[in-house]
Length: 162
Image (cartoon, helix red, strand yellow):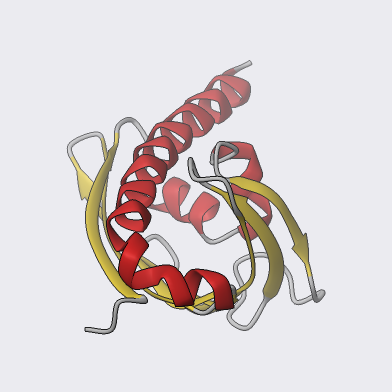
């Protein structure tokens, strides 16, 4: 595998939220800064296709623990309500992010696969040397995503009850 290509397999458990509730958040790129704000600093829609629509695109700016920002386009590639969210990314990195949702007790289990190729020239050039740091940075971001999604959904649930 080239040094600028990565694959990450992870699982999240989101208690007290149905697969459809989780899907409603994961399928809406504009919500990323609201629940994964530690990483996603800005998301701007690029079309008027609407939320949760295959082909809808948004421009994103993100940052992990390492001192650089990434700019990329997110495009909804495959969407099955309550079951599957697949997005493609283009820009500083090209990739495919896949989230499969399934019921788990009173919550939702999410299996995630993130396949990415670093394309930003300086990062691509340094990928072989910095590969362990890039992997560490990813491991820093994903628990924040899971925790943020849990918090966001819990807050939504409280807001609905009020």
